[in-house]
Image (tube, rainbow, N blue to C red; front, side, top):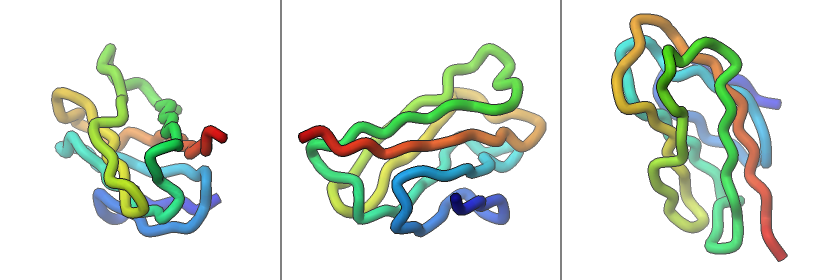
Length: 87
């Protein structure tokens, strides 16, 4: 699994991984060619999101998907992500 924490994005060919939404930001972009019309993207926070829901905000086929929360947190939020292709 690849872990990213320096910015609000990562580029990967993996189908699962860990990432960190930096403090003060509300979106994180995962660039992956594995995102398509028949894929599902799951995200799960591994830290306290302060009662906010971490969700998949948008996706662009064969390019990326965005993970978001509604309000910025005062600390980094680690989360897991997983892309599943439906067949």
